[in-house]
Length: 603
Image (cartoon, rainbow, N blue to C red):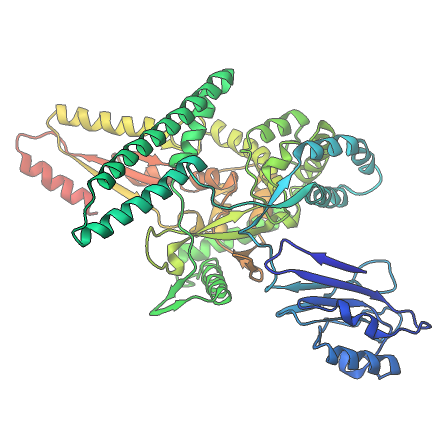
């Protein structure tokens, strides 16, 4: 079997062969089909010592000679593929660079499957784009939902969930086709572009003649006329586009306002510049693999567990209490309040329709198209995990993509912003868990009233207005005010897990919620993705996961007692930033009041 694969960075041909032991074959019949970038693989029933088999046979010698004549190389696997013997008879040969084989130890066949990967062959992102037929996707989901509900009665819910996400990912791939498109489309229609090209020709000719004192009045008038005409055409084209857009908004009835601001947000949203170089000291890295390795080292170092000071009584007290809490959680039998399909449906509605996928290749856009039957199946899985205070371990793996913080120049590793892509189903589960944590915190008045942001009905603009009003009141009373602003560097990334668990325990959070939070925090991993390259996994032992709806709220719970450390002065918390207003007691002279502010502000 011969398969040609297009849409990659370079064309690829795969030749699959099965050569039974009793069959005679002339390998030269295959030679005309072996071209550049060809992978020849299959069950050859041929053995040789050079290919990890215990002995040579005649077929192996013939095959090795033919491979060398066609300039192919043997791809080494991690172990022999035959289950019945120590022979390695499933072989692959190619001239593609950087291709490796991995023997996977699962399956019911008498041969282990082999996975071949290459970093030198990838999808060509500059010419081919995926086109997904979402209507077909929804129709197939509806036709299959009864099957998936019945399957839950036959297998465990964890196995059901693993099969379900693989089905969603595979179905999306099945209804997606790759088509050639221009990545950068012109901002103006073809007719105006032709006029601009003609104008450029006339302008160049005019200035070339003027350089030699051959100025032509007719060409000057033509140039001015064309310029005015084209500017008028461009203005009319943009005005017509804007009028058409406004008509679409007016015809969208109740969604007009949301569509309008969504459109403007896309136009004026600041975008991070891509980076193809990375500075390390005085050296600038340009090789993709070197950049990927450097980012891997940087983030692996950043997420290492915090270094404890064993001479610090506070640190030792926290660790001792933390270990006692974990012992208590291991024997706890409490359960988290279960959910229902209505709550899950509301959580799905709150998701933004993004098409970026996590490590499971499932996006928000896919989940928002789930029929009711799948939501019911998810509810059964969520309820099991809530009762057992856990979640799938696959959700603890994050895919980190890096953005450039700089507007110009070559960034360093610490001048990149990590964006974590998590499993989308984990976001649904976390939203449900967040409602239980928020209900506990608000009913017990854990969050101070000075906190704005990361809470419903507590907007940051309201906090800005309250600061403004307080300063105005002090000015009206002729009282000077000192305003101090604190910005936490990498606030989420520096949260100490043990201290968070201890603080939640001291706040008397239900043990079921605490147990679930600890399961969610512990044993997390990440991979760094740069372009088409992915690094190996590394552990995350500090900080709160980015992209999770639980992280912001747990952070404000974590530092909720900070307002008690500022004394009697006014405190305002903006999301993860802090503002303290210090006003001096009224006096007859300004100098004592300023001295008071300086003394209090430098404590």
